[in-house]
Length: 407
Image 1 (spheres, rainbow, N blue to C red):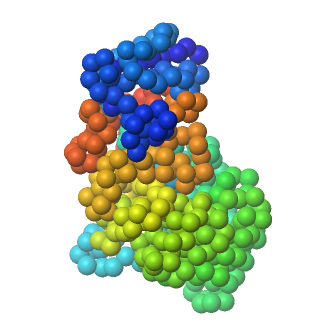
Image 2 (cartoon, one colour; image 1 turned 180 degrees about the vertical axis):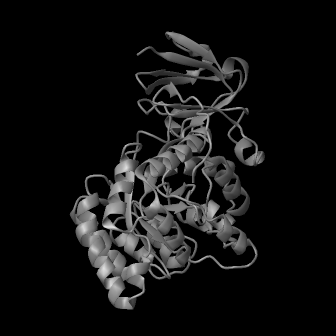
């Protein structure tokens, strides 16, 4: 594979402070001080000033445009069919969001064919690429039967290494209508036959531990069973209420605790002293008119933050990381630099990856060329598409023309 040099980068975000000054390792300027980068064999092999750019097989002049690492979306729900636009409209007219709406998508997903699920996944992945996302995680959780959870993860695993078993999303209707007995039976199914069936297709295990979903004891049982089979834990925590999910996340060394809307001082202290990333999902608060997490308290305490889209048909139907960055800056009081870091290196940390989310030497050549001189413009110009090019493993991702949607 040939090497490619990129010259005259107005602002190069590396997320590697050893390569440049500032919180995000930023190089660049104008003229002779503009940044440069060389990629080879799908990896970053050199960064520095354009004036010192080494020879390469080909060269691309970016004319002062900014380059940032590809976004790492560490929380998404892409395996579904149908939509819940009517539910969204009703909620905007005053109806509160609750976990029960998930059951609508479960019915549509169970009724869909494998081809329909794969087609919808690929449509959303194409949108992600167009918004600068180069690594994404996706969960199951809209099948909630052994067969439907297995096929969801089998389809997903063909398109990403970051697959998450979320059989414990909600208790499906056929079990919930029998009250606590049915809930207990469903938990037994999740930790038994369902977990055994998905283990070949999943990397992670997740639980929606919240009001109206699964309590801490149930979540501990499910996550512990997953860990015993070799899956790595993550958790939906404290979106709707604080029922103790953060303590469980830290106890089990979950890679991430996602949502983190309702946090006590003790929760923040625990996150700051742990390896668990606090993954914030501004699209969910935006789409449900819920309070935003207190990101400043988390950062000031020393917790590691990630930003993710939470793409799902019920509470955050967006694949746009730039949108999430703009909302996080405006509503969660992150600086533009903090938001970019959280959407790249932070997302990588939430997946316990070091090869993505940065443009340090040896990192995957996953990056985005912005039609702007600086990363700051992503928050500064909300709603404007500034993604010029998305590169993954050193290859330019060509836009896919989308036909009629069948979802």
